[in-house]
Image (tube, rainbow, N blue to C red; front, side, top):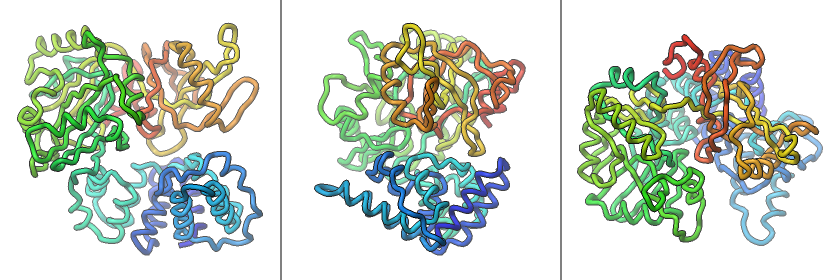
Length: 511
């Protein structure tokens, strides 16, 4: 398949805000794909993430590739994918030059439009609106399979390119046969904000109310003696958390998949700052800062998959295998007991509580109403779009952040406000050091960046405002922390922000 066909489709998707039009363009291209390998490459390119992930070539290397473009399109998707494979495998002495030579040859074979597409793809700036939800719809349409079947296969496999290849090459039966596989992470089930604790309990009863910890999501797989640990973004961190590996290896079972949180605690048992927990995920050596696990779900136990079972059954399995490590919780509470659990969680230094329906299956990757989070304050996960140079005491540092909400239809993030409040000296120094590395445009006043960093914002509410493109603005927004455990695709959507408007349907942005 010619790369030019993918480039043209990318441009068509970027040119419309209509979800139906995006899906139609993508599906038309996918119907032309001849084999599974090409399907994986095309889907990877169109969602802006090469199949190989990071290929080892930095931003500067890519943007400085300026060979004269080819006069006419002849480069194929398969050739591009092959070169990216070779670049990602280059290692050892001379690898830097080898990568540069391979990429120079690739760009020399590309037309001007193809060069721009490749440049944006390899620098993480290809955002034409083919996000996961849109692409899943397109895969289902192209393969003539139900969207729900494609979605389930994606959530269990964790790979959109693999899901597309299965659907397009092997059809409905193969797609429906995708199952939970030990050692392959499942996309995590997500929660929606609750309007209030009484409403959440009333809606979800019979339910369980459990602490919402200020920790990091983990998913642990054990198959015999082999234990693997993954983050919420499905990144493996097994080597960084030996204490968690040892603990799970000692549980009374042959195989298990556990979902939970981990965090570092102070000597008196209170949670340490989130950043200290996250620092362990990148560690390569032993450390004295130990992580404690708190599990809240069991998706598999001793050969039996539980993902479709109700939460009540999954909790029975969890108590059987890891009762001593279950997150603090109250089963089937009345409102008084649920309120007491919330009070205890806040007093212990945690964020609030989760209210979960005991009848619900594990909807991997979905943010639905079966799990609802209750916090004493509103928070949103937003994308950093830019930062302004500070004044006064903050002169010389990047301070005031421009914040964007995710467009659920795959467009660029929608700006909803700015804030400089809550930024500690440590965070100011960090973002002044890190943001220029992902800059797309700089002036004497502001540095615009690639929309890839997620920051957690606390706010008093949302108000209607014509000042920003989304028609809403944040009220008294302040930075709580950066979220290195989340990607831009995990940020809250503009619909979720609008749902916080006074009088808005609280569920409108989450269902």
